[in-house]
Length: 415
Image (cartoon, rainbow, N blue to C red; front, side, top):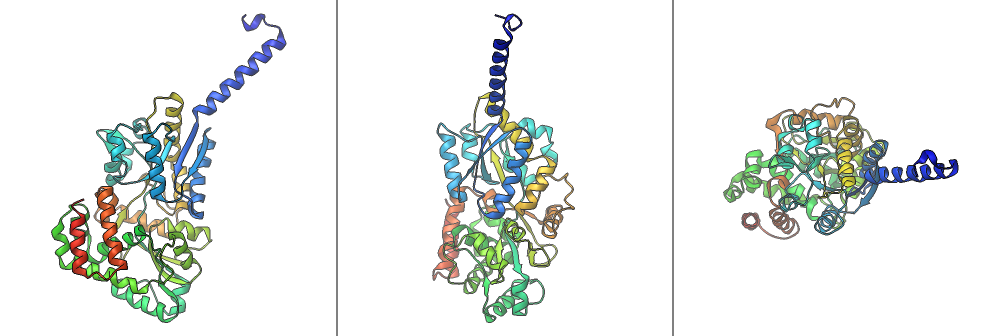
């Protein structure tokens, strides 16, 4: 019976039911389960910016946090390959998701990329990592430099260290003073990935970009035999003497907390550490130092985070994925998220003048293409990266000679 011929009460009841159904369908269409590994205090504050923006856009954010990048990626791949993928999953800018692209397990985000002009607004290394076969398969969230040199101003004052080191020689002099003052010179978490970024920070800044790229990008085994590479290996191993006994198993944010409390002098870590300093209400340049490297033209390593969108033909899922992609890459959201994450916006068309001194330094660096290099995860397969990490960890903790470590690094390239 048409509604206009129904008794008023029945008509109202039918309309109420219809409205509820429409609302439920609308909410379902905008529901997005996001799997990620942002679990530290600073990271949680940052991801809340994304969640809040998505809710304000009319969506329902379902948070699926898994501690640890390796565990979260494994969970994501398992679910994508299975029958219950999330709406979106976090990965790094890397080769980590090439297999799922090759297997046709991801939806593209071409419409959002075209609308927001990613082809002209993203750095080329980012474009090369998310666009394949003419399609965009990942949503870029930020740019990280994984190997900043952080320092505690309070610890440096206590040890009598003046100014930021401008070379590895000056860094070691500062580490000696910190050690003599009874402080932890270098805060390192004894986890393989933390030791790895310490290694390639030394390789990049001690041996220089040509040697770094010859190994990680070109996979040239002969580069390991060069004098700059061997010097970098010796410098890396020398740093081990300045790490405290509590390092093994320590999380990166716990190492950052040692700088925040003034118990340690330096940490080599990604700019996600800045989120922890911000959370503690410390001010860049006043309470803590941040250096890209040594000198004004130090190379800047690009890394970052992305969301991949698992394959689905469900209209509701597709709508949620497009809404999520458009929301997290919008200018205001990019600024709010990166301000708390410690990273810098991935879009080149944004005004970053409201960001802190460390972010400003990063923004200046990426404008100079000569300074920008990709991080190892963007240049090597996951298997190769894992093999190199294992070699680095063994060298860091064991009694291997530089020559033995060099041979092992050459073998790792064969993976």
